[in-house]
Image (cartoon, rainbow, N blue to C red; front, side):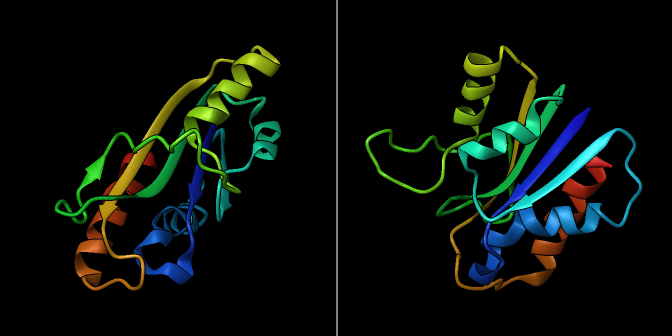
Length: 136
């Protein structure tokens, strides 16, 4: 089963990209696909992924220059920083080490430096539609 996880905070402008992608995908009938929308990744999410053969994380990643570009990776968090959220790579590690699961793994990020609003709704929508088309 394929699992698509869209995460982010819709109250923080373009940070809600992953959640917006899931909202659009929920209107489509995707076969053998589980859709998950969360504000942030947490260790407990690992339990939702035990049956997954392919996991796709969708989020917004910070970039000073390449606004609305789509990327296949995101910056890995500083391991020394204390936080309530974890990186997709940590979820993958939990699956592998705790449950002997090793699903395919993919990250899709829309690059942005604006976490207060969506200043260019047209470009945002174009990125959103491109990711939805890829995932449908």
